Amino acid sequence: MSFFNSIGRSMQRSGPRSTKRSPTPTSATFPTSPSGENLPATAGSPTTINSGQKPLYLCSPFVEAALVKGNFKTIVMLPKYVDIMEWVAVNIFDFFQNLNMFYGVISECCTQSSCPTMSAGPALSYTWINQDRKSVQLAAPTYIDYVMTWVQNLLDDEGTFPTKSGHDFPPTFPATIKHVYRQLLRVFAHIYHAHYPQILHLRSEPHFNSLFAHFLAFGREYELLDIKDVRGTPGQPAVGIGALWERWKEMGILEG
Ligand SMILES: [Zn+2]
Image (spheres, rainbow, N blue to C red):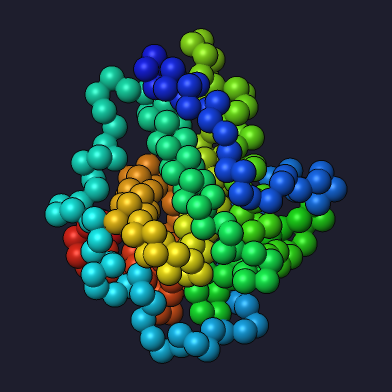
């Protein structure tokens, strides 16, 4: 385990979570973990305002913002002498912190009324599997709060993300990480779909694009990300972040 990574993570961990988000839900409604089975469900009401129009994040100049020449392959490669588990852990930690910060800033605009479902594209919204294994629609802020609280708790759990020397990563670590990755992907997808105007308003699209492209490249490199979670149903036109991913592949920013 890398000494510096461990120290870095321990120090960063003490940072406060955003105070703008809703408080942690009660244990009565808080599932122990989001299910890996909850595939995107088709929502009943397709967006009419923007139907047929390209979302802004797919338009120039926003789609290219801050995506430097070349691709992300080099920055996701495992550095020499670094343990792969530790490399994955430290990157997940950074992705989570950055995404949490972005969501904290825009969370005022993500409310029960503005986002009654966890939408991620026209006619695409994610459902949550509750404790009774039932698929339920949650408002996006509730869904995201569940995800972020769950991930934060995992990161703080020495048994899942060991930081002390002599503590090994558990055998379940790869499966847990894939699960985390899928849920964080959904948070990105919702922000792109529902809150891109706020990202633009903050002039943060270069940073946000870079963060997401890095997240995708890393996820593909270490097989943490299922193509169908990004791309959507095979044989159908890609929507939302699936379309963005395809565009970045065409541009040579990401690999297939
Ligand atoms: Zn929202």
